[in-house]
Length: 114
Length: 114
Image (cartoon, rainbow over all chains, first blue to last red; front, side, top):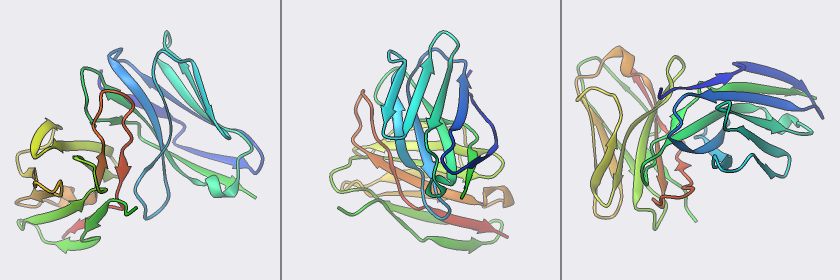
């Protein structure tokens, strides 16, 4: 119930292509769904986030698509660049109040080939 | 604006020892949370503090503890270290709100237990 399942584990995309990472959850009480990007030797950094009352959010080349009925959400990276090569984590926040507790997916290692 | 500062960045301990990790949040952030990152388990929530009070705790044994000081700086302690405690320990700070809170992570403290 408290898990977030993320796929694929790794992804190789050509420069200029679209990277798609998927996440699924069970707990309908989750109220906030961020995506984090992590480079080697660094901590995760917030990339983009969405709330369950919104079906899509776009920020530059990054888009979250959210399907509340299917309990799935995905990250799309358009025009992928070598600098996007990193590990991406989806996450979900348990509802019920202000908290920084996040349940993270297992991560996707993205490699964008030039 | 300085980011989240974690010290030490790297440390090596032996089984049975204890370790204390430190985190200085972004100025003005009163909420600090801790996560453990391992290749096998990914990012797992340890605990969070707000105004010196522990608000939430993850599913970790009592060997893991933390505290927050009046200046919002936080420490976490792991006693009787086990080999499985080897991990990257990440601290994150934020304004704690019921809305879309943004966690800013530090670079982490990499603990190796021999």
